[in-house]
Every structure is written in structure tokens, then in C-alpha cells.
Length: 234
Ligand code: G3P
Image 1 (cartoon, helix red, strand yellow):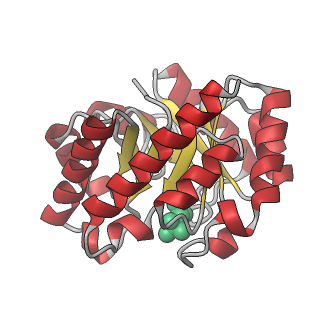
Image 2 (cartoon, helix red, strand yellow):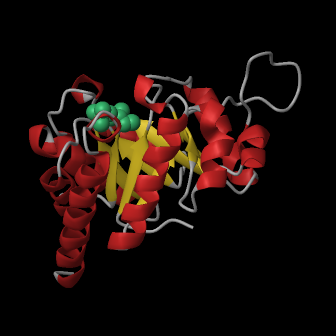
């Protein structure tokens, strides 16, 4: 279902992703995935989830899901709902949508029981260690202070990326590790892969770009090159 290296595009709720433009951005992502043979997934706003799923063939994630069972939880979004929309999984505990530790564990469990993929976000090496012990399928380390800055974590804080890769490998090497925050160009993606990740989670550089397809193409090209280099040096 997922292909690596993987570029996950979190659309957040930027003005650029309200309405038809959200579909356009998802379609570009699909075109780039096909053209470069790289994994690209999108996480549209919840109101666009079904429409995006029905418009593209690439994996679509929810940005957040609540831990509750179906019932009287007004205003909530639960696992069964995103599954019914056709999402493949959900981001969990994004730094802009923090979740209590007990709820993180519950959401991961509920997603997996429903055959969906938890993509857990952490912000430090220590929280990555704790998060890896909850066995998400994918873990993305993102220092919040770099989010939306255009300063890439892979260059500005490589020690966090390397530290996160290291603890994940020790705790459960089957977890796929990504990094994010400030990823803006192909070279940032290549650097993330050189540091041992299997891809990136990013938002503003794609969603707010004048030419999103061109920036994503350059990221995909760099990802494939860095990935092949890593594989051949193993
Ligand atoms: O979920 C991705 C995100 O938090 C990073 O955002 O805008 O720095 O790529 P950005």
C-alpha cells in the first residue's frame, strides 16, 4: 500500500487547500508519484477526505482522529469514519494537534484493529523513544520550532534525525521513520534519507508554492537518487 522512499504531504488547513485547489494539489502528487516511482501520500483537511480519496489513487491519510468508539461524542472524528471515507490511515499527535499519551496509545491500537496505518509524530529523540514503544507503522520526528520556517530539520538539526533513527532501529526496526519541519527542497529530502530516514513529512513548501508540482518533482527526484545510493552502499 505504501511505497518508499515516501513523501507525505500534510495539507493542514491552509487557505490553498479549501475547495477545488485541494484536489488539484492531490492530483499533482499522484502524477509525481507515478512519474518518479516514489511514494507520495497526502493528508487533506477532514472535509475533503472523501473527495480526495475519490480523485486520486495514492494513499490518503486523515490529519487527526479521535480515540473514541462510535457513540455520543459530538463533533468528533473517529477511526470508523475515516476508514469509511477510504483513508489508509491517520497522522497521530501532530504538534499542532497534540494528543494525551493514553489517547495516542488508544488511537494507534484502534487504527491497527481497523486495518489502518498510524503515522505518529514526535518532536524529540526522547518522545521518539516513547512513541516507538507504542508500535506505530510510521513515525515522523518534527521539531515544532522549525515547522513552517523553511529551515529544514535535516540540515539544521541532523542530530535529532539521527537520534530518532537510532532509537527506532533499537526499539522496533520495522517502524518506518520519516522526518519533517522546514523541508523545502530536493536537497533537504536527500539529506533526510542520507541521515537514515525513509522519507519526509512536509507541508508549506508544497501547499504554498507558486509551482507545487515542480518543487515536488525535484523532491521526488532527489529522494530516489538518495534512496538508491543508500541501498547500494548497504
Ligand atoms: O506535518 C508537516 C509539518 O508540520 C511540517 O510543516 O510547513 O515545515 O513543512 P512545514
